[in-house]
Amino acid sequence: MIPESVKIVEVGPRDGLQNESRILPVAERIRLIENLAEAGLKQIEAGSFVRPDLLPQMSDTDQVLAGLNLDSGIGYPVLVPNMRGLDNALAAGAREIAVFAAASETFSQKNINCGINESIRRFAEVTKPAIDQGLSVRGYISCVLGCPYEGFISPEQVAAVARYLEDIGCYEISLGDTIGIGTPIATGKLIDSITSHIPVDRLAVHFHDTYGQALANILTALQAGISVVDSSVAGLGGCPYARGASGNVATEDVVFMLDGMGIHHGVDLVMLIATGQSICTVLDRPVMSKVNVARSPVYFEV
Image (cartoon, rainbow, N blue to C red; front, side, top):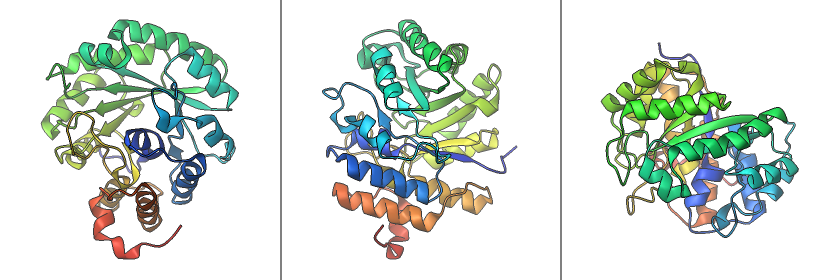
């Protein structure tokens, strides 16, 4: 059941950087993305079209896209929260967008000021014109294994949101453990619940490593047949609901595990480690990847 190859979706330049306190200039963001592409990653989140006063780390995403070769065969998805964001993404030449829903009613209300059903209705207004204009749309679900406000989230609730996202045209749905409390048994139950409604080849996983469970959960997902994994170089980002805790699982750690399992992914680990070291030097923050720290003597400038 374990897939022979895995697609890694690199989320560091978007999900990672948006949780960093330092705002990087456009040139540094482009450099990071280009280094990740050179390391072999084929799907790299390039930014988001959210109001810059709400998320200054992602301002000027249009300039980031302008500095990339959008015809290189590498996907550069961008987060789009509403029609204004879609208009800006289209003007910037985006080829793929992402929309975010939550499996928690309370989280949805606090995060985007509306409930789950209303959020899906709003996203449908975005996805239809996007698809009509030839863009691909990826869907994300937050809080799939727990919510900072509601605690336990039932797999059935996650499955319902996943079906909504599929209905509005999302080609792939990424299951996000936002606070990183999931464990392998819970992950397995969640995937079993969802795959009774949605084919496994349309699912991805997005684990945070807050409690050190991310790789174990990814292994469970692989054993269930999921072949798309989101991760962030050097573990960029953090968990906003657990002070001082790590956030996104590090791409280096995922690649090392896949290498050990003989699963193809197309990423050069040495170049990835160097990229992680380089961006953390720029951000003046420690590398959160255990593999990167263990292999740090291979560091070289990129």
